Every structure is written in C-alpha cells, then in structure tokens.
Image (cartoon, rainbow, N blue to C red; front, side, top):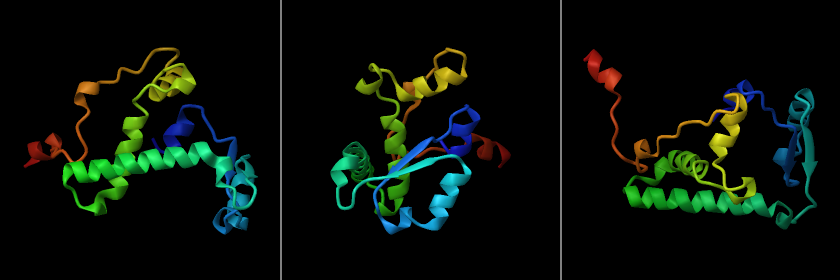
Length: 140
C-alpha cells in the first residue's frame, strides 16, 4: 500500500518516532513533517531499545525476505521485492495486538462501511513464482 492509497482511505500519519540519526533530524525532514501536521518525536541517543517493537518487526521482515530469496532460488538483487512481499504476507496474518484480526481487514473495514475485505488466500503465490500478465499475451 502506498501513501496515496493510505490517504485515500481517510488515514494520515499523525506522529513519527525516529532515532537521533542526522538523516531524520535534517531541516528538510522537520519541514516536511511540519507542513503535513506530523508530530516528530525522537528517542534518546544510542538507545535502540526505545524502538524495540519497530526493530523487532524490521528483523522479522528481513528474516522472512531472506527465507523467500533462498527458498525461491532468486538472486539477492530481488531483495526489495522480497521485502515488499514479506510485508504483504505479514499484513495478511492475524495479529494479537488487534484482537487477532487481520490488519488489511481492519484498515479497509473503516473505508468499506464495516464490510470485510474478501481476501483470497488461495490466490497468494510463493515469492519468485513465475506469473504471466494475460492482458499482454492477448495483445500478441
């Protein structure tokens, strides 16, 4: 899901918590957040423990993406695609923090007037599985 789709469903980022790295403390980042009404919070220097949930989630996604790369036999150059797929799969699994609901259902339920999103799990293919765009084949 990209930023425009997120905003189209009436959601917006209200608070961003970052560490004290120079890239997140630049004037450009502060200006960007200020223009959009995003409150920018920072952790104490050298204390990654304060972002433990995010650090753990990043590690989970990275391990999942690594398993997908090796399991599919694809080149490590597909890393970003594997990470995106890992996040997608992660968001299709129930989470205890939201009463064992599926995050995509919770997100879309608000914009679909309480209706659940019909997720077709049987159409979910393993990472690296060869697929073909049928609309392109029809043109040939």
